[in-house]
Length: 46
Length: 537
Image 1 (cartoon, each protein chain N blue to C red):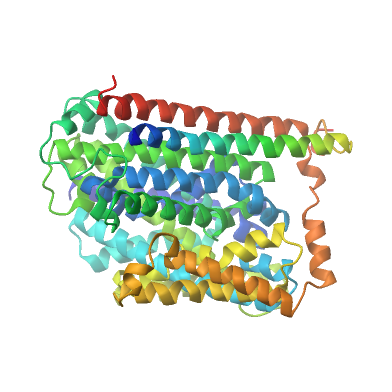
Image 2 (image 1 turned 90 degrees about the vertical axis):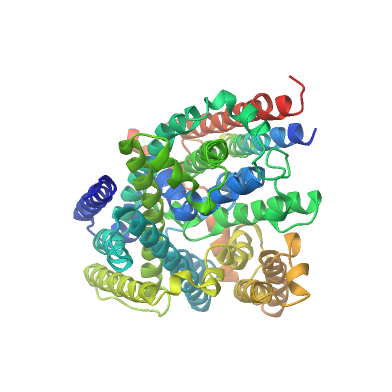
């Protein structure tokens, strides 16, 4: 039983890190969008 | 001349040529210190992982697996990997945003006090010189074994290789050779794996062979591993060892100058997130693959006299000479890449962080930086010849001590409105002394400390607790000034160049890759080990 929980934890930590990264950055992007500060293109592309 | 000597010489020449060629594009101090602040994801992830993995990662850690603690190491690594993802989000991106050239400079600028910069510089120099000595010594011993040349000659050859391009090219040379070395040990290990697995019937037979092997260490296949190997006396203690050490390394990769400091070179903040994701996957997936190779040797030769040489034994005995040479060159590359990073970080700090030096021009600063780098390199070589790299007490000053000292002032510089310059400085000093004094008591076996200071009372955590305490006291005694507060407010503003929607979309792809890698790792462990080992499939 311990080995099963262990296996779930090892991959789980990596997956949780991925979820955390996406949640934090999505929230940031949303805030920028609400304040109308999100750029569709970088300045160097214009 | 044996094939291993030829392999060593060819790889050293390749690193030298590429490292020195990179120096041709060094035009100013920014190029020399932070690689022009334009390194892409591949180079940052390469230098992150290569700097973290030294000779010890291929020897000491693999010996730990061979003697029964693969599960301890896998758990430790999986927690450490989280630091690569969280670090850039809570600290690394702000470090890059500050546009400083060294981490001590960041502490001086953020807290508006040169004393903070100097203290961080001193801690950097002490700790990373100790780490540098350990790295050079490791590479020297390994090269001596492989080539048959004397230890003194090997030490000089290794030193000459990384010092030449670090002195001339600075971070430009270090970041590109680190990535080269990362690719060398990554490819060598990937190619070598099937040879080692097939020598005992293939990867599919590994678990079955180990389960029927009477010579494997106790509890090798249990989730808690070989209990005495962790210094514990029961299952809970063994698991807590892995968890606490995993958290130590999570913090270390998130805030230490040879890891978080790599973010100073990134092309953008988004690159720091993506590089962290790649380094995290390498830490879990690649190191698991390497660890499996080490325990496979138990089915081929369960009685190695020196467990640390498990992969060296495999390179000599289970694969064609050319592949074996690649593996050994890869192990050496891991040591050289760490050494070049440590030397560069120490050299930069000696030049700029100890005294408020005013340079008359960028050209003069670049010239001075190169001379200092060479002098630091020569001093390191002399200390290594004196045998200090193998001294146990010296090793206590290396690696995680900086994280115990810097995590509170580092992360606090972003998340705390109340942490002042005095609080940060006291926290830094308390973390350093709070780590090293208990470490000495434990290391010298002073009772009862050697049995009390374990797991969450490990010297690292004692340093961390004291650091937190003194951060609060120092900030009460001398509260935050308006200048410090204003700097932090500006630091939290996302620069215009970082607000591009397409960049956020690309970041999310890396997040999804992390999730998929995590799920696949769990499935591999479940169906390759946990379920069959428990007789459930």
